[in-house]
Length: 365
Image (cartoon, rainbow, N blue to C red; front, side):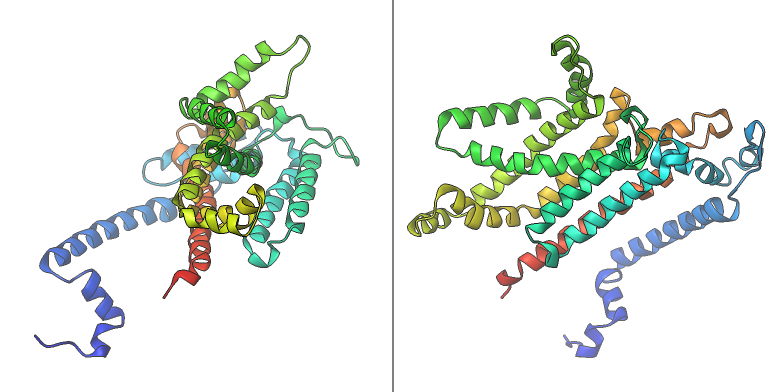
């Protein structure tokens, strides 16, 4: 059999032959999928662009969506997004104060970007996060520096989703490390407590914990004591995230060879120095994919706070289409919300892949 020359084994034509047309079955499958994809793309372009309604007139009675209803089924109504995007992003936050919620969202995105750059991985980064979280709290609550006080019952939208997800992961992650170390402890009492915590939390769904935090927990508090609903939901999310992350980290700890522990003991390192300098860096490096997988899942699970009356991004979008003028246009709002979720989750996924490749460079031959 003739071996193809080097120039025939590289380039776009060679890639197409090797991946899409390497046999008659793959060729037939590729052609069928291309035809289906072309028809679907043409339908989406016709529905989402050509026949779409981008704006509607607004009268004394509110927006007039007759034009959208006339093309319903054959064209998208993006006018619902242009009319309700502020409610979907910021919930019931006062309209004149929504610039504060916007700054909070930008602060979170800036923190994610800065924290993802290796050059900023210094102890000072923890201080930056602390100051930023304090600033976020002041912006959202207000009541100082001339800012109008806004109770948490009016928080919502993307800002609330980022607060729940970011604070939840930031607090649950160190908790998970302690629980994972506790499960491997030689002290039976500590090990039993950690096992009981993990098994009990993992035995119930997140929606149950949120319900208990919202309804059952206030019944157990002394008379006159009533913790904030958002705080109770945040604690439930932290406990839930912490149990799942602990099991992932424990898997990384168990994957390390026993020689790593023996080498640390031979150097005379203490228990905490051994874990901080040798064990945990390697264990966390091994479990980056499942950790990011859990982070993505947690980011989406924050939408369950709707059951206790908190309006996150998804819940605010559902409420936005409750108006009579916009009923029947849920697809457009879900596409808008889905794009936001996709942007955050896809960024996390791509960053984890780059981080994993960067940290494993020393293992390449």
